[in-house]
Length: 511
Ligand SMILES: Cc1cc2nc3c(=O)[nH]c(=O)nc-3n(C[C@H](O)[C@H](O)[C@H](O)COP(=O)(O)OP(=O)(O)OC[C@H]3O[C@@H](n4cnc5c(N)ncnc54)[C@H](O)[C@@H]3O)c2cc1C
Ligand code: SF4
Image (cartoon, rainbow, N blue to C red; front, side, top):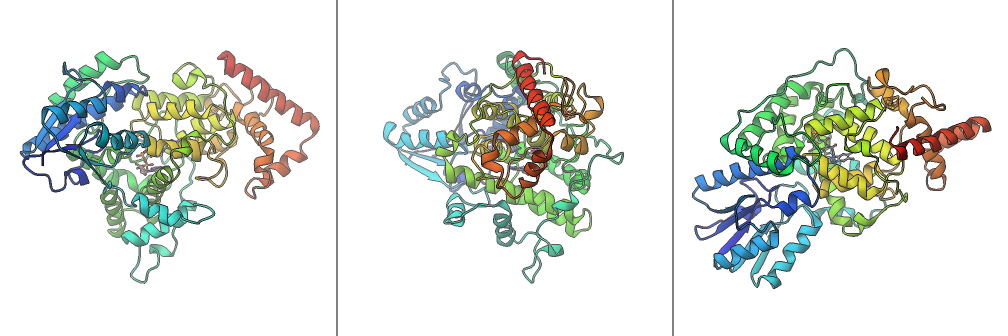
């Protein structure tokens, strides 16, 4: 039977299920589609990463004598719609069957399922074998549980893959989690580590020209472009991370430093998410580095937990809860997203720093996403859909399955506590402790009231008061409510007035 096998832009792994048992009469379809890069206006670096990595991957397949039907962005017949391109290929190649690996986003799954009828073909949707926990396996784990907590899920995954486990069934080092050792504030020990760069292939040069001409109105800088775009290059990034950065990853995982976007973070999410690296091989390399005595246990475990634990847990939540999940807005957050998220001037040094990293690199590290841009959005009650769209557009690693539970659930508490047991709300004190941003800020982090007081401070208390009914009984927040209750009435009034002013300044574009 003539079979069409689809490879999406985030499925660039030779070992992916849709390529298993491929025969000489099968054809692979890969397309560069305007619809997919403009439905959300993605960062130019992300579009370049997609197109260049896809073109290299197609080349690799062709080198193995596999038939590839590749539709380039500028091909005159390109309809720029996924379904139309599949229809075109089905007709022109007399296709009877389509094989595809399950996509990463809910709306694609719906589209794909409709093809069996609308295109009159047999359709086989295969499990995405790159993930370490299948969707049904997660559903079984979650079944009848009152609360879904990453920590318990993660322990199961450690046992399942025998990662950082001892022969007696105990976790290596005796503990499952070394997070307490991973919260060091920035110090003078932090030295910027040179990141590797890759020689630009002709494919990449062409793609950069194409992206420059077509997407320069999207938020973000295309140049300089230094992302890996092939598996070999991504493996170099992985080795560089393990050798040079993982040793300090744990200690400074939560630290933020002005002018240093990456610190000791891996920058591997973009490559793992598009398939150039496999999550299991990444975890195994980190474990090996620990076993060889090259990195400490807190670093290796902290890193592995992000991938084996958080990444798989987040994906499990997405497929468990969609499509209803995408409509949640538990805290009824609806303030419009201020323009400074799109690069306009703000006096808040921490926001300016995180957003400028985002613009330049299509990247900011987890704590900047969670405790700066995310924390502000939570405290200011920014519209959850607008915030999610921002995160989806601006980061090179962003796909709905991973962005949505992180943004809506972890950061905005918009799912009412499915992902997080309490909101990640913090005043300026947290940012002061974990960064050096406050030193050069227009605002004063020590003050809660007055025109130059750090906006995070008054917004923090305002947020807690506004949602008192939801959170006062949460044991992890009750202490903060007790603290507020002890404030003098005049202090409470001044904080509330400062919060109102902040909202006004935000609307006027003066924050
Ligand atoms: C509001 C918000 C939005 C986010 N959106 C995305 C997103 O769209 N895509 C994305 O891949 N990650 C997202 N994350 C998670 C995390 O911030 C990024 O994975 C991480 O910053 C990527 O940088 P890195 O590769 O240097 O990660 P490192 O800090 O080096 O961590 C190692 C790896 O662990 C994985 N990881 C770590 N934390 C998470 C997490 N919470 N969820 C899933 N995987 C995780 C990633 O694969 C990452 O490469 C988001 C987090 C927040 C708070
Ligand atoms: S003072 Fe407030 S706004 Fe300024 S950098 Fe510190 S936390 Fe951010």
